[in-house]
Length: 348
Image (cartoon, rainbow, N blue to C red; front, side, top):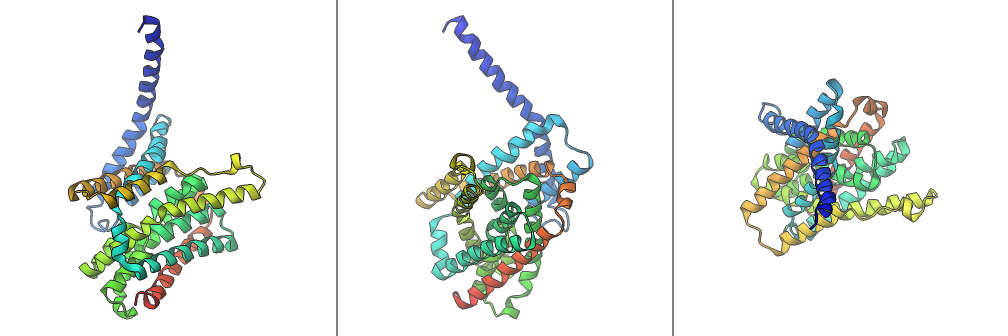
């Protein structure tokens, strides 16, 4: 290579290092908040919450008190978008087709019907009470599938504002946490055995950590059934995102947009998620590797949600009023009631 040929190459390398250097302040801030979230969850009263939820709460406090330094912006945006997508891909390693088969046809039917009914009802009710369509779709996604992870995955096609994303995450966090504490008090009252209770909890509580806490508090059998039901529900994340993308595309065309401007491509990370599920189904992944991937997934999601919290202005959340919160409450009650009825009718 001649000297003149190496000059553009050195220029490209310099640009790459410059971009990486620009990410450091934001990524460092996000990492510090994430580390604080992991430490905080060992405090009394916070052990039931995942580091993801604590991280976004801490970050929102920082953003709305101290503020976000301008030089941290690029790194925060990188964590909020790129890191998040890799976390969703790794989430697929937690699932296998054998998990679904282990749940049984009746159990999976409870999960699937509850999910579809809740998503449709929430979007419908949101339109009736005046909640913005994009925000209603995010609340519907988080309530019907897997909490914060589903909200951010759905936003890849709905393209709502970060304030809407934060509002939706707040809704599913609050009502999922309430369910986590209330559900273990109800099995005997509702006439549920351990297996039936586990399916109900897994089909209706929002976050994976919340499901595990509510399930194993009743007993190991209930905890295992709840975890399997929840993972089967997470497996439906990919078709939900694709279906939501088609809805957004159709809505854009109806409003006069072209396929080019209104169309929503299949998110690449959803394809990666499906690939990881297939990989975990056909290859016997060692337990230490699977557990390690789970830890990495949680860490990446914590980083991403910390970044999202740093981008959230509470004033903009307040401006949306109480209607989205009411929508989240009704949606959570709806999925609890519908899944309970289905457990008695289908899996009882």
